[in-house]
Image (cartoon, rainbow, N blue to C red):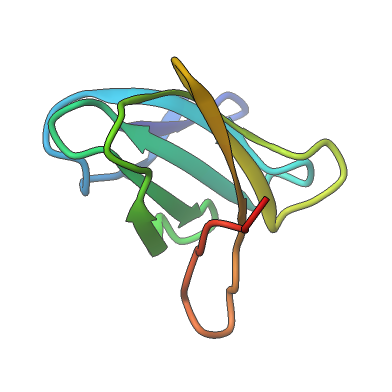
Length: 104
């Protein structure tokens, strides 16, 4: 994945943690973080810090392939991933560098 600056028309970061396919992307409401969702080859949810391009934390998104990831509209630490037959809620713990699924 690549993050570009539209202002300077230059490459900011080249992000490499997913094996092949990136299934979905979502910026947090304040654009400090980026969530990426890998495809069927790795099925991982990864949270990136946009300013540095570093992967902060990640977790398996489940046994089924997730199709979409979205940060909540007013939060930079809560997300949802959607699969064919369900959804998972996530709360990012930036201090301990974890992104556990919430029990619903």
